[in-house]
Image (cartoon, rainbow, N blue to C red; front, side, top):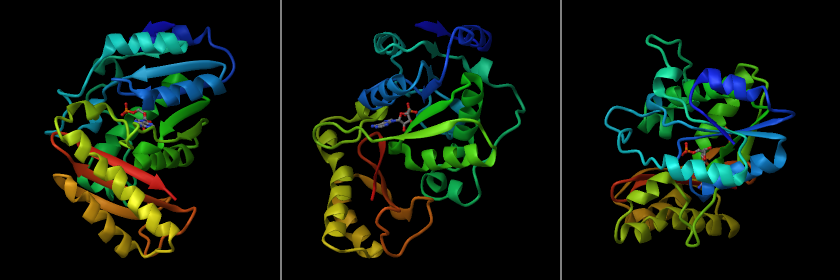
Length: 274
Ligand code: AMP
């Protein structure tokens, strides 16, 4: 594995790669969720690039940019063990200049749910993903369904800007109790880890009801909110189509159920595709 920190070193290291290039962008503090993406990309491609970059432009004022968990040493070892070819860990200065040209999230899909609660987050996310896709020269880029709206917007960016890359959606990885893995889970203390399970429990409750024939979105959301009373604050429960349009009835095969809630210090998100 080659570990590179500058754009020039990345371009140099890329000259040795052959065939398809799998690419997995991350913000580090790697966990099993990230590893599943990296392993899938390893299996499906001749070459593999992983990036670790805590991107400042996707954090809003007052969010946890400075406190975001960082585990560079452990992450480097993990990438080496998995067989990553190039690990790209750029500095903020090498990625951005002042007064940049910016890509904006779409006015509707980019400003509902996560986009409504975190206005500007998706602009910053798309800005860095565009840079990273171009820099990596990826033929296949891997993103988790855990960040469902992010995945939808990246897919749209690739389509709208005619980027020559295949976006590969990857399944959500959970712990043995059902909690979706997240770098921010390290902030869960005491009973919070147990209470955080209410997000996946609410999704399971909705699935059971859908299986039993309940398709009414308002009724499903009401049931989910009861389960979510364990959280400190629920930010949203939403049931939308795969392209993030509001639904009145669940459409099997075209629906995502999403939840965002605060449990202790972290804000957690989870979702289920049905
Ligand atoms: P992050 O480091 O949080 O920016 O995540 C990097 C990539 O890993 C994104 O595509 C995430 O959607 C994905 N990811 C994070 N957590 C999980 C998880 N529990 N299961 C699957 N993918 C995940």
